[in-house]
Image (cartoon, rainbow, N blue to C red; front, side, top):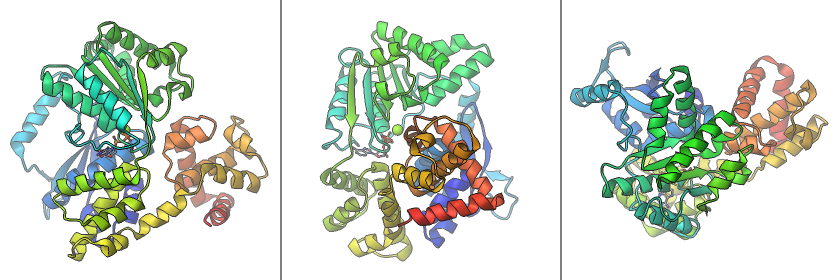
Length: 449
Ligand code: ADP
Ligand code: MG
């Protein structure tokens, strides 16, 4: 995924910026338990830039592309030394961190809440005001009205932000409250590990005794029976103790494949609320807020221009602003509409492809291989269908910005790991199998206009 992330970034930054942030930057170790990914960067400036601007995208990319959760930690390579030797800029802090790691993990603190994800930093508008209202109500009186609160909607629309805002609010009012925020995959991993290590008691202790349980992207519980069983009991315990449960998902509970009926029904006991993409006005307001926070001076026309370039995903909207900012720094120029236009040219290319629907890819691929879209979405495992199916998944990944789960969904509700596997397989075969290579080439040509 590192390579993938680098390619993505190479396409986004110009050469100077790319070299500044990515050259001599590499991951050196990953700890499966703490999810810590150590990354070497070449100097303190790069470290700062990564921490501030790139780490969230890296986390997202690792999660979206490879399905792994990471906590990036940046270390600076000592100049003129072998990269294995590392300078620790703030030794005290580091020792503290290590001690924390060694002690049995405490889950009572807001260990993983992003400090920016507060209600104060959340701009309300059409599309999110219902969800924001519900989240505020829950933060105000947890465990009483909307339990569980189920927030659903597309990628990058603020689900995680809102969910964590509830956590922050509760901790602000009750600093000793036990708030647990997890990606649903962490729950899965923790559970599996607890079985392996015979630490199920600690596992239950962690999840069943909190005051507020925040489970992010719960769609990943799809098809995982054992996990659902465990989560059911977690849910029951918390619910009966009137502890608040908040979940997010990219779809409704009823649309999560093979989610047990009793979970579906429990998820609907409280409130289900959707976040839809922000309108232009909200996007401008969000950009203005971010620009102010960054101390950037940007006139209204330019804000309007940037907001009009990214029309769905707020994460991308932020990305566009970062890009304009980086461009201005490198060009040593003030930010205005012309500069923003130049900085965002390649965004347009991505947007052009965004119009490309996965269904269109399926259609073209099915035609090309003389099969049907139904077969591509089906489960048959004969070669005549498996290869076109994998190629269609590969192209969906390459030519649209749909996430792996989304692509899986479009292919008859397959798991994101299936899509990832298909992508990797075709990616390798292109290099060795001339037939596959030319098929992919032809198809790309057919799809690219
Ligand atoms: P999701 O979990 O729905 O994929 P996130 O909560 O991760 O989306 O949001 C993506 C980014 O957009 C985050 O950096 C978040 O702070 C920002 N964001 C989303 N909605 C808003 C909003 N209404 N106001 C300010 N920032 C927002
Ligand atoms: Mg999220």
